[in-house]
Length: 604
Image 1 (cartoon, rainbow, N blue to C red):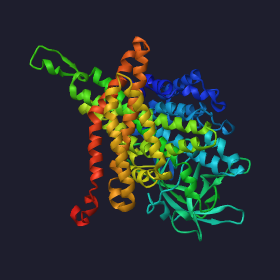
Image 2 (image 1 turned 60 degrees about the vertical axis):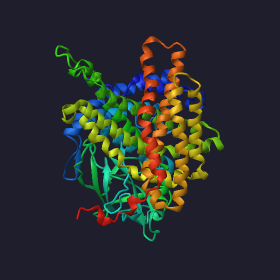
Image 3 (image 1 turned 180 degrees about the vertical axis):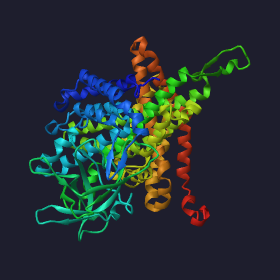
Image 4 (image 1 turned 90 degrees about the horizontal axis):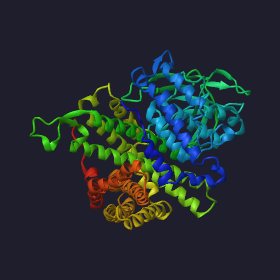
């Protein structure tokens, strides 16, 4: 069975031909990351993923995290893989070398993540959460907190999490009840219970550092009264050594549909009155601190979805090339005709084409958002820098919400291509489908992503961000319309863009006049925006490929480039018409979803 995870030719195409990432090396910040360095990093990530992390995937699913006596143990293979991951300094790829990061562009880190996440994203969750905790310390921590925690988090010597969720405060974080009481020495006594804490307890590292959301006595109600505290599993002495156990007790782990290789914990803080934390950032501004990390966290979830989808597609397409079943459709009456690989059957080709365009479009989208982050980082202060940040903010709900919806669809098609074999544990597409499902739920459900899109991103700066997005798409349309091979796809995408502009204006108006109806159409609107972004990415890819063919591409690359042109053609002919219908439904403004009486839903 081929073990590819991500198509290296496609990864290189996006990095070097679509985005031209090596241009970042012109800036002093990224001067060390020329094409040779970028290619070496991606190769090393691929080797690590295939040789060390992929072998843990089955163990993670079938052995999983084991809970007993307040402790969680991980499969033995995880320990070897964690050592390889941390020895290679892969946890803080894009972070400041002063604190142990590698300082590489986010775009290059996205390519490396394609492989690492695809190999076993349940395992890699611990790394992603650790990086997120470290980033909070870097951005909000005192000098002492940075000295004590930051290098150990970025190196993976210690791991980290984020403690937000409580039983009565899931998406409604402002309803949390965990409290923080000041102590005379400037620390705080923390008391409360948290649930759904990924990697909240395990034996991969001697200490786990928890940024915890809690409320000080007398703080305002709701999110405006939430503070953030740094609470380690074991207290940390002034010299950085480990001290006493900090009364952070794992009371159980969840039995989940997927990602069995990551412990989803319930944690009791201060049940014996001995849990101590330090304020991270300013009092009553914990949610602001959390939102500082939200873009990166949601982009990470989108990359998890892409990684699962990419692996499922490559497993499926290679299986379809080797699985022989039934005669060719045009020779069905010829009983002497041999059976053929299922990739020759039209419906299988339809499924594979659908998987292909979404995987490739989502890869381009994820890398593009990362590329915008890199451009924003090196741009001088001013209007361009602010506009780039606004474009990133706008695309995050798409890169998380839309991407994970399509990733689940791709993984479902992967099972379908395998047929009955796809439904059994012997083949990896079954696990990928179960694992990917969580990506549409955590870091803000996809419904919340859609509400964020219409409630905040659509109207920010008087709608300038989405107008900038439309302008970017029109640039690609103009170039593609002037190119013979891509002009037909561009001609189909152009009216869809015009319709989306009208739909966006309608949603902005409806959001003010009839917020309930607007909210009922928020998810379809997110899908419509996502579809147009997919069309844009695929057309951009097709135009780049057509230019390469015109320039006399090498024969070995011709099939790849033709695949890009035909991918845009497939999407705009077969999938984009559904988007047009979706937009017509939004514009009709039906309020039926809100009008149905609760009793009419039945079920009593």
